[in-house]
Image 1 (cartoon, rainbow, N blue to C red):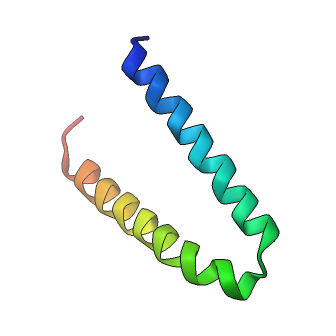
Image 2: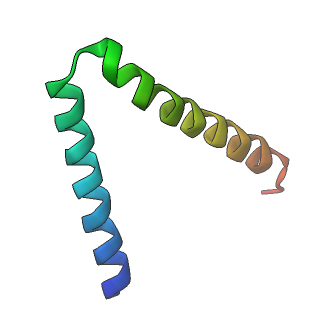
Length: 58
C-alpha cells in the first residue's frame, strides 16, 4: 500500500473519530442538522453507484 493511501486512511479515521465525539457530546437536535444531510448524500451516491453497476455486464 502506498503512502498516500495510508495517509488518506489516517485522515478518514481522524474525521470519523471527530464525528463520533461531536455526536456523543451534542444532543440529537444539534447533530442531526449537521450529520443528516451528509448521511443523506452518502445514501444517494450509493444508490447511484448501484444503479450504474447494475447496468454493467458481467
